[in-house]
Image (cartoon, rainbow, N blue to C red; front, side, top):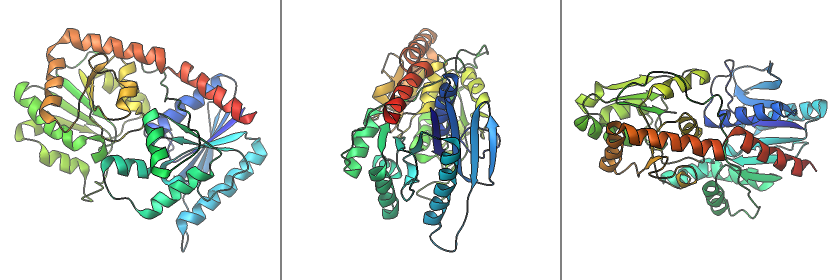
Length: 378
């Protein structure tokens, strides 16, 4: 098979940005190649256009083009034309795209189109209870309605998306997978009483709640530290730096024990995970987060949110603790429990790693995706 992915992000040093969607595509692409299939990646909205051969995966950077009017439409059509040329030349069997912003809404691609539900803008606005631009909703709905096939990374996301867009299509679920060989136990001295949050510094990830949670933690364990690993994002409500909003919520005592590290290469993330005592991921809006999979695969005890998708991955009091991030005191108490009980922390970490290896390994998830693609191509 020759499978193509259309995406705004992908982990590579010549591509400006990558997050969870990029990581999940990379994992799947590498598994497809390992099984003898061919993979092409189309990365749009880039600073330049070029083709990169990367370990049997062909990466096409597509530069963003601005038009005198309706750029959102004409840029999509230019992507369509470019991809159709490659489809014809390279005999691509099908193309997969994410649901975010409905990138395929006005495209007529000459191969079957799968949209994988990682979470639309409509979905995230619903979870965050904020107003959405009507154009975004209409474009995403058009893309989903026109897609040949839909697939979701979690049952929760599939159900919510069907409800929000009144979709009639069947939406099978194949969870994100993780490379359990790459994300495994890294021999590194763990820093006592250290907390790690990694991912974008953004409101929907519960970062502002985390500031108030850490204020409680620091009153009980004064030597506790919190590292934020990820890029700062402009806040959707105030239009200002989310990191600045986070800092303003910290007590004077807590401010001294917080470190922010901007984006690091994807290959270095696991070193930061390995060094942390406890991973804290209090997100309000996800589909099936790669950060959770990565931390669990590395045998780390987590304290996460308990919303929607969380119950499909985390098992409360088995693989870690799950709590509503708005319950600052309770969330902080669970962090303190893990920092104070090495045996419990170790037990949760072992359970978390075992859950990933048995249910979410790249081999298992990759095989499910390959079977699904083969059914479509037939």
